[in-house]
Image: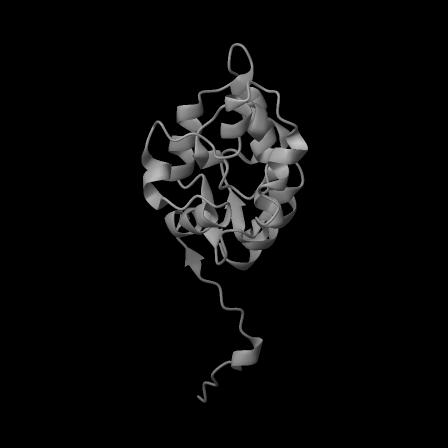
Length: 165
């Protein structure tokens, strides 16, 4: 029997990056330079809404958004990230519609789900799996909270499931 090795040019290389590494990359990509401390402190608020809160809502959304124009497209803030006070862990997820829907649900009175449960699921229960680049939404796969996304993961999830899982 003659076993042939596959041609390297025909092999797809996929490396699962830990959620921590992807989140750290995204933290730096949005300009938060104090690393893990920002993510693991309960008091760490979003950098996107600090100016809005200080101005008591008088700042223009466009002005605040322009400060983050250099961030990757999928990490740039949506309006609700600027106007609703929240923890930074949502800001580093490269799914604009997920962030928008999650923050609207959290800001609802009463909240539509427990934010601590969402954070725990993402960080501890493989609620999100990251492949390669953390800033690229096509490299993430959502599990339990997929229903909070519009087009982002619904399209790419089956692809990764068929290729990798």
